[in-house]
Length: 549
Ligand code: GLN
Image 1 (cartoon, helix red, strand yellow):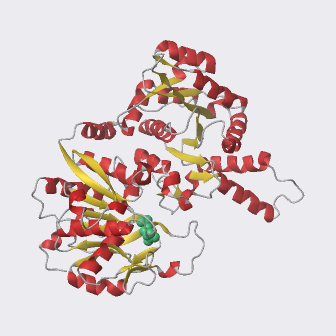
Image 2 (cartoon, helix red, strand yellow):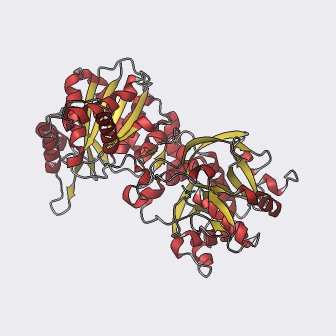
Image 3 (cartoon, helix red, strand yellow):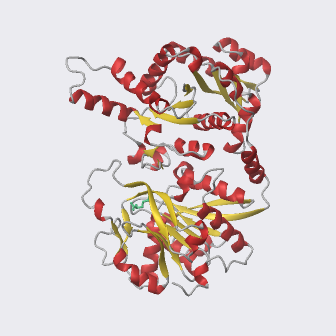
């Protein structure tokens, strides 16, 4: 029998509902329960795939190729599980289904309405993952803030489910803010009271209130919140600001959040929390023995959420290397031949980020050249890999106008070209090469060394690819394809023979890095950065010694 936890948010956005939901899920999982999380987003886009990162941060891609909210990345990183298309639902997708059903005649003769038709579809989707019978607990995060017009149908669906289910089968956690007023030297509970009142007006009564706060909540404040919001005092949980999101599960453990949930849901027979690996990771994170500086070359750097999974992958890779990874954001639009040395000169490694469109690509190409010529450890992801191929074509193969047809349709040397299957695609939503594909690695290469196996599987999100018509020329000059799709021959990984650590990947390795399983390319990249910092890098790449290729 699956139990359901709904997480709503009040007072303001950006309180970290996703982190609280993931932390609660982690604690329940650590007690031996099978848990998953899903997110319901109130916007009308079918998915965030067509949104600019400035609007919505990174688009997280699941194994099955769904373009989803970045909170799903947190769920996977915390829980070490895969999510899927079903774990992220938007208002757009709900309406699309209902409207399609209406066209198909499913409601013939009836007026189609928000209640019950839209709310029925929301409820159906809220229960879908639980209906598989695979989980003890499904946590559903409701995007947006209580009081927003667009979240109302979701809140109404939660109200209906609360009525339809037995009391011990579902509960609501409400996350709010307790602001500290400096002038009054006081924490204020009024916004929380208002937000719970608003939720109650919509018929949903929270069982647990999680309070984001900069300062500790004393017992009196907890009692006051409990009294005004009609919850038990122990169900008022302090969520004080943490240095790292990965500390939040332990803070929630101290607050007893998981125990309150288990009691309220009448779940017995759970074990003590097994968080050994998590704590080990946190120890390493807190007490690094060294530091490296990695340049992140991108064009969305003003908004850190745009590169969320990459930044988190560095946290995981840093911890396992017992080393703090200091990220230096470098805006690719402002890198020129003249200032590149000054901008990148103090770095221990360079990552060129994914992206779309023309803006900022020339700066990325200049940065790649710098890393190639100065033997700086280099890691290019998706567009970053494509820029590495273009740089090599222009500056080593002497194909001066080489480009990707994404940026220059008329380039004489399209070393990066639109994939054949993309040429007939005109629709924009969900039409890229998405999700997980296998990749065969060439023995004796850096990639093979990193993964330690001959076939891997990684996730994708792109339309352009390396143009195999140029592969022989590239390989003869020293840039080889060390990973390819076994079915199509699509180049998945490129690397340089005469460079200590230079790798470009067409896929998105950052999407599979978790606390318990840091992604191997990131791990070895940080290792290479450490060695570069110590001035002793020269040996990582087996291609440097190998005569095989
Ligand atoms: N714009 C490039 C493509 O579509 C790269 C995409 C990316 O970096 N995710 O192929």
